[in-house]
Length: 251
Image (tube, rainbow, N blue to C red; front, side, top):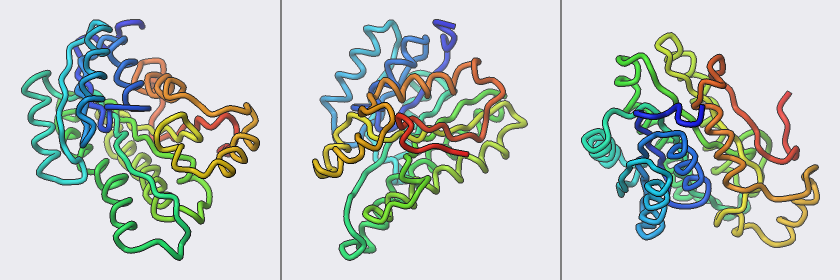
């Protein structure tokens, strides 16, 4: 299983840092050639690409705002020209705002939906037809525990992440007959830049409410993503796997 993705091409949106970087490295270690997408963190993306190559895989860095249709079209074209058709897509790009409803505006609503949900739709639609034609595809959407339970201080974010869960279920059923599997991971508190936007007291309370009594690591999530794109999960599609240290559970 160590190099089971040899000869495959993977695209990771928001791959420069945090969970995205950890996913890129896991895919590279499994033998995939990895396209590292980023929007503004060029230096971090190049560092991730260097690590991918150190792991023995080929790859490239592509700047694109995946909430914009024309940029997604360009992104996928560049990846396919350099590395070949996309076999594995990890929709990881996203943004976060932690604000009460009194401060939530239409602009913040649109920003969350565009960056967290529409982006996944656009990238999925850009690669799905090729996957279906070839009879192979693995898609993982990075959602959040915020999409699984009420989040009154980040309503647009929670709605966007809940939408990813629904997108996962519906596309899994639509694409399943063609051996294109779609699953999601829902991280809880993970040691990334995003988690540091939470106030210290709320972060401490979250850790205290986590049965494993710690924040997760990007590698914790990347291991789960790797499982879902591997043949170890060959009979799994349409599912959302929670990585929250036990803080949030599904029935």
